[in-house]
Image (tube, rainbow, N blue to C red; front, top):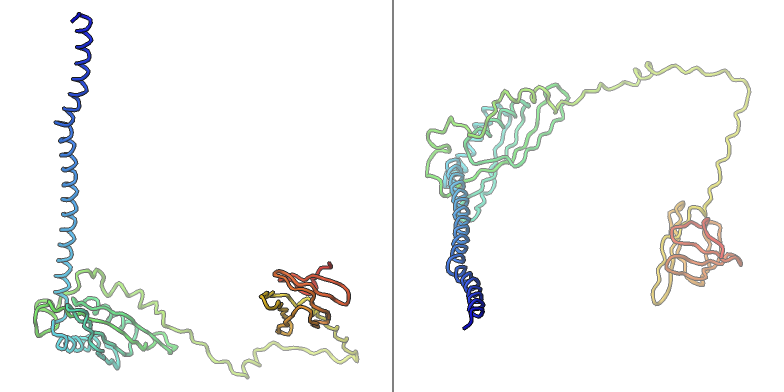
Length: 328
């Protein structure tokens, strides 16, 4: 083999080694490294999702534990009786007058809890109502007010309010058995999320929105006394000028073409007289008379009609009045 051929063969083998070796290195070393990196990234995302899910589970467990501690006793009948007595004591503490606490039907919600609705009807002043609502929200119980109606017909600075309160309490079956409404050690406790005091509502009580303005009835005698004096002119023998005649109404300007109905059997159009609030139906080949205009319907199309007014052919488009007809 000549020297030149040896050189060419060496170059060719070198090219094969470069390309073949690159593929070998890529398949042997680089590909597994890339696969491992993707695997590591996937595992990191899975761990992050798992941590988020675990955090949500811990939060749900903490919330469930809080709800369980604030729940009414698990027996719904006993819980309803204890809660009703507690509401009566709350009414007395707030000095509500003629308070009536009515339990409604206990509603089972699935297999985990019961919903117990109640209605309170009473009379109170605004400060007493605020005290009741404040004490209600302070109680460490699983309950809420769903609706409250307040009515007053008095015209005094601090009127008596007729109130109707609808509320609900929850009894979880997982709550601890007890013979008292509030768990031991929580009788004087308050809801941990309450940050205000009753004094924070003093401005609301002072600016009572239920005060109605009082208007003294005006007697007829006082009204006459306070009315301005009107002096009459002495009679001069002059006659009053005759009233000007009212301008005549152009009836045709108030009659409009409002519809054009076309079917396989017949065509029909509607005129509407705004002055007399009536509808006039038109058909092809039929005479008509409305608002002092007489004629015959020549044709009815989708957007207009053609009329023959004593030998004069005119077109009336939908939405136009009889005064807006155009000659053809």
